[in-house]
Picture 1: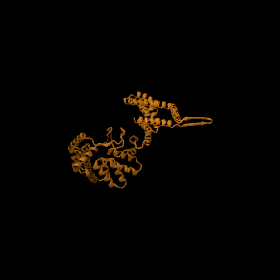
Picture 2 (picture 1 turned 180 degrees about the horizontal axis):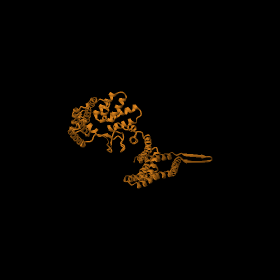
Picture 3 (picture 1 turned 90 degrees about the vertical axis):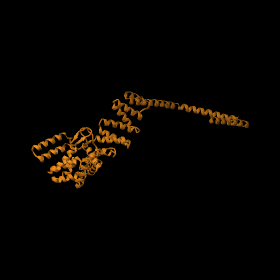
Length: 433
């Protein structure tokens, strides 16, 4: 409305100006050689205005004619883009519906309309992979990886394929390229950590695992595994301490730290390390290492008392004390420990077999001794088995702790079957105290 009012005002001013000039009179003279032209001022102005309008119309028509092919191309590109987007949508629906052949057909249409864009190449690769055509899928991923705007997506697809084929060298190379293309990407870090576990590169797996990502035992197992691979003694020692710090009751880590402390000339520190680990989670290997240097039987009894002092009520502590006392000929002390263990209901097969040995020492080869031996052997057959190293993924037993279960290939899952109950009992004793 306002625009129309201004147009009327402008027209009124123009008409007024034309009438004013006509009333004023005057002529416009044009002289070319001997030719003389004279016209009124108002007519000259009218000619100028009409000429300007005509010239503007001609130029506008010429511009419109020149821009006609470009407008045709723009309209065609817009139509292709609209049809291509519709084909992409149909391809996504087909992929979601699990019909790869339909998806491949729609993607071919989309690529014909839109060209090889990052999203058409990605959809091509996914459709080909769903159809079981991995070579064609990898070709699309390689084309995607060659583009600056789709490199990470292409490398991710190629990395996934390499891991499925278990081509670990290629997977590691692609993971490094993906990290260079997208530094700090959490997915790349997770894949590199998985690759490190697959290739048994424990040091890299530990470096790529954030402190809060793994449980204490898993991190301790990984750190100790990395220590076994570390050629530099200082770094290996630091990794062993890290393992023990992550899980203070992890016997293999405590033994590794104690061995290194002994080798460095600190046997007292080694014994303290073993005592601390025993307090958290008693383990037969800890007792063997602690008592191993004591040749005298009575000295071994005193050493066993020192080892078990802070966790005296634990079944493993009572078993060690009973066995060492029996070996030293202190049968009364041994019987008190072993019978107390048996009567507590927490004894395993080892305690009953130790009772067999004790009755053999005390009663000898007599009718009473043979009857007692038979009684304890029957009890041992019905008793729970002794704790052992076992893979929690497949259940395979192991004679010693290892970084990897060779039976199922799972890293960091070999645990002491009695460790959980030992820690729980230790917590109960601490709470009761």
